[in-house]
Amino acid sequence: LGPSSRARARRARRPDAAMAAAVALARPAGAASAAGVLSLLEEQENQLRVAALERLNEVVDQFWHEIADYLTDIESLYEDASFPGRQLAALVASKVFYHLEEYEDALRLALGAGQLFDLSHRSEYVEKIVAVAIDEYVKLRTNNFENELKKKDPVAIDDRLEDVVKRMFDRCLEDKAFKQGLGMALETRRLDIIKTFITASDDAPGMLQYAQTSAMTMLTSKAFRERVLRTLVEIYTSTKDVNYTALCQCYFILNEPLEVAKILKDLLGRDKEGCCTAYQIAFDVVDNENQHFCNVILKSPLLKL
Image (cartoon, rainbow, N blue to C red; front, top):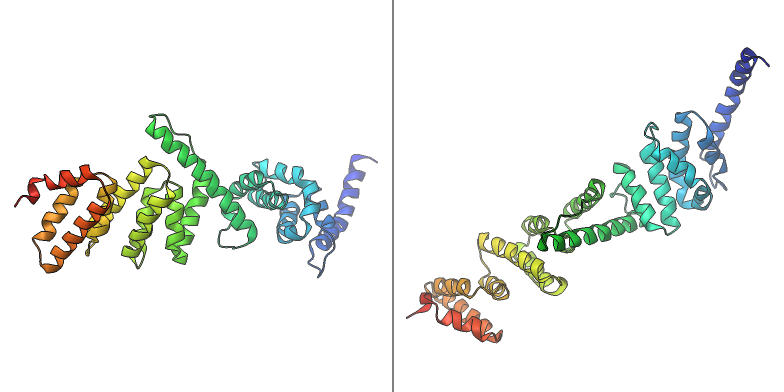
């Protein structure tokens, strides 16, 4: 055949290809295989390949074992900067890796999917990949905190990973899951987010107490625990009804006896309730069994009669 004959032959085949694509992309009830859809990935037209990926995204949980044989092709589409369905290809590949229990690759490709990796879909896949993402973020943030203490340069964190964690914090705020968000903020060394969840809550005093208890029981880093407590001190002192007992406990852990002396001086100059609070704080300080801390308070000129 000459060139013109081959061109006519290709044009003659196009209706058949279009019909085959339509059949493959149909949504029959109880489909037994994804082979027809997968064959469309070999087409040259991007429109057909994107349509195939959209259909595969719908059936990946059912036919992931078949789609796994095409992972190389799907990843190639993701890596092709000119392909219009790159993020969709990344999402499909990520879901297949999830089913293969290869969670690092699943996370890598979920990050490549951008906003198509939708945290509002509360599927097992999303929850697992979010957990893997947070674990990775915790590891990186913890290492960077240690590098900061050692005056070393921090390791850059992928902006896409930062975005997933931020969206998870936003989801917690939207769901009013303040304790879950606060726990994540503590794990990820995010002092700014800790403050956000405490102040956004309808029960700030309860969240302050929860944060203080969590800091003392969850955090193994003394340096970061002290930073958390200083953040809590800022919040305590900016609230209308200050919990002086909890505030003094923070000062005790931070080893700041003179701050406790100032509070005792202030409370003793108030009404009967203030005096009672001062006495209770004094009993708590003694119960902590730190003689040096007690002696510094006793020697403070603020408490001289």
